[in-house]
Image (cartoon, one colour):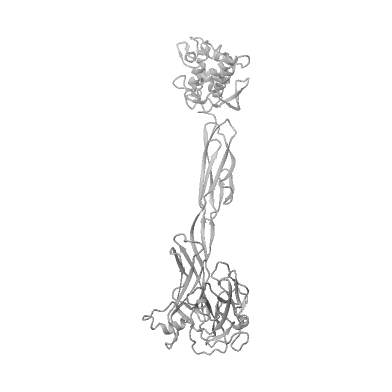
Length: 597
């Protein structure tokens, strides 16, 4: 016997407390058989076979049958062919059947999809043996369609769906109410979010150079992890259909997922009203506090409940009841988050986008140039950054490079010390009696011990002029040029120090205490005017100073003096190459193109 929720509510609610009955699930727009081995669902549709659970039609010829959601893996009927019949909503009166029609199993499913769109009126015969099915005796024009694997349409092998055909000759007496119909769809999504990192390297961090600009070559690595899953969500739309000629009030629509980590919410689904002869939709969403146990076997169920419905005279139009529908094994779609980043650099600007699927790590190379200061050092901070496309997450890496010009010492060249300005400083220097103090100071260095120990300041000035004019780098040795350059450096030290000859040359600090980088000395190009320019090439002169990589100017003077005989006739064993290294060191100091260490 077919037991509907209407009959159940009417006769059984009075004894439910006393007798335990088997579970009955009868609904409109969904599977309405007793729980059994036949899975899936059926629903009625129109001739396009695109509508789901339409349920209300203008004519019996407009009613078609489908076999559940039309995609593999959904809650469709198993493959095979089925018997079909149409009855009144109670199931007591058969109005049309395929049994005995010649094609007893006209409804077929292959790959979980109907073979074709089946018009009910064309695959059934009515009680008079004519194609189609009889009109329903139900006052509201409600029918029930049955699909079964057996011709007896027993509950374990059967799925049903109720539908309504509007009729003009239906009487206006209060109809016996029919349960609400419910349907739904379900789509799962989850985020697969990537985390990005960025690093930056540079080919060097320090450049010492005279003028121009310094170029640095950068290498940036942009990489991502394997990604992490999260934010699992199931959402969709629930449809509730009221086939009655009266509104059903106090309806509660709830949704659930089999996974215990999921919580579902239905928009406006509490204590709502379903108007007469209407279909109402309810959006819903389910969120997960943890990953589902499986992305392939989740089920999503909607349940609709309603209280007794009464007319104005207190007569019951519809007993309280419920309907439910389950989407089985719905699928989850991966939503990639932050699969791309935009990369920018404070020097080069836009470096383009890097995405998952590119080489990981993705390597970006480029160069940046920075101006060299006239004196001293400047730091340049170069920062590369990424911003993720979806969440605007950022990351950065930076490198600080240093660009150094020469040390600002205030030293002066051999050309200065032989002109009237330099000569004036020497001649006006302090004396002890008639003996010039600068001369005594110079004589501590072996190369200048050919200067008289009792020289006046005028004689010291004349000595300086003579040595500088004799400066020459030609020949087998470079003694004369080395002596002149060293002499100018010694005068720079003496006349920049308040404790010696006073700061007569307005140096920023005593030059003797300035430390000099001996690994980066300009190879000087001397001119006949007593000046020199840096060739741009840097050389390591430490071998001329005992291998020291840096010394103060006073230490440089002392070391060079130790490699000379008295009067500067023979230096460095007369090895011209070594003499040139020492000469270039003094020359760079005098021209303020020497670097701090």
